[in-house]
Amino acid sequence: MKVENLTDKEWEILKIHPQNAADIIENVDFLKDAVPIILQHHERFDGTGYPHQLKGDQIVYLARMLTVIDSFDAMTLIRPYQKRKTYSKAIEELKRCSGTQFDPKTVEIYISVIESLVTKYS
View 1 (cartoon, one colour):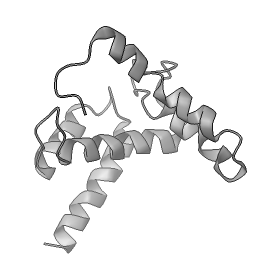
View 2 (view 1 turned 90 degrees about the vertical axis):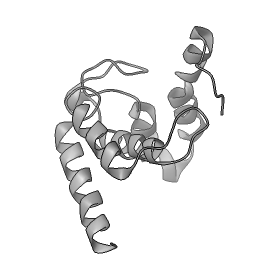
View 3 (view 1 turned 45 degrees about the vertical axis):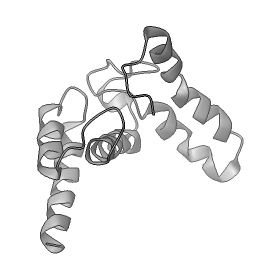
């Protein structure tokens, strides 16, 4: 909820949250299959993410999908540290980051779902 930019130390602390979350659920039987998804949801398609700098198909598919969904959610909701984007601006951002931050196929699928829902409920 911090409004100003994170310090380097705060950023390093933040980057361990995927591992912390995975550690919490790894011994819960019905959540074991979610461990890789949780652990990898901040990896980037180009290999510059965290915590393990995985790249492309090294990142499990559902983690690649969660990354897109979580990012769209973060862009389109009110947050104290950034201005909310419209759906169309968030879609532009997904397209712009396709192939670097996001899996291009996953972005394409997600955008088609969002656009069909917007059309359906407009």
